[in-house]
Image 1 (cartoon, rainbow, N blue to C red):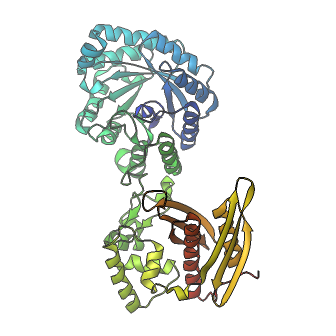
Image 2: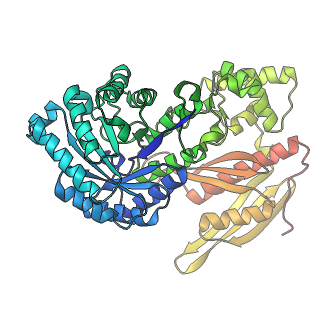
Length: 515
């Protein structure tokens, strides 16, 4: 029978302790709502005693976010426990999580307490928290460097005092999977009343072992895993929620366990946390990295195109990551290249494909990323300027604080010269709207990027745009010291590529407006 593991998300508490990841109240509330949609069981919303902002965030989340249990951290001190309750009271489902260290290293050098004093304080504060709420969690900080007999003594005492969850933290990421798994088994064997509480684990990633340790604990019988979105947290971070959840979901045959997480919300949650904290996800990050479902190797691409199970153990759709991404580069194979050309509307002969594939390999040695316009150049020779569907003849733009931006555009389209005047929200928008009316394009502007090629006020500006029509996209580039002209050239460059594709597929002559 499959066990359900409780997912305790501490992104808003331990995750926020990542340097530079501090969040305001509204940002915490936004993430908490998404965590609820994700389906986490417990949200550790913050540390109520630490600041007025954390107190307010916990209070708002407890009152406004439905579904998960809302938890506040509290040191084993009366003021902390009382403050946690003040923030949580009135919430539908709440928990107080109190902690004190049990390792001799911490007790001697940081807390200046004896083992007996630490045990008494732990029991007293669990009892105090239990006076406020039924759901109390206790953590013996630095458990993996604590003497086992003493650790088990503390756990037995806090469970007797009312702790429903006992969390075993690998606070400094010191344990190995074998050691941590054995520690969980030892606790089950040596703590007489352990069945009265859920065993939780909270693993840090200092040695890159947080997910492995967490999963080992599940194998040993742990019922709750504490983790964060994208694995953010103190120092090297925490066990990543997405890794733990997808390991359990994908390998139920090994773990005999699963979670209630709505995995299709994982990618969206990852992006939100990354955006709010400003902490980018590395491309090769498991589950949520940009390359997690991207394939460049020709051998891999060939297998995937025949059967996705050959090189993907999860469907990207299952974590909300869209679809498999075939990346064309110097390692790509002929099969993937042919399929990409077919997606673009081309059906080359075998001889044409062979020649184009050779050109792809040469180009891939010169640049890291191959775009659709590069494939256009490869499969059908780069068009001469005389063959462009649309060519800029002149442009005149007026804009200012006291007038509506206006653009007059004159284009050559085949053997015709056409012109029009249009308005927009700004000079570039006015120019683009006017060009769209002249060319009668149905394309949509997807992106617009400006950068300076050189320094100084007279720098040559480069504009890159992406337009999309009927599910096909084209990138256009333009450069000029006048950024408006560069923008127009980039837009026309993209439209010309779309027109060339339409012509290859029998779309006929370029369209022009009857101005």
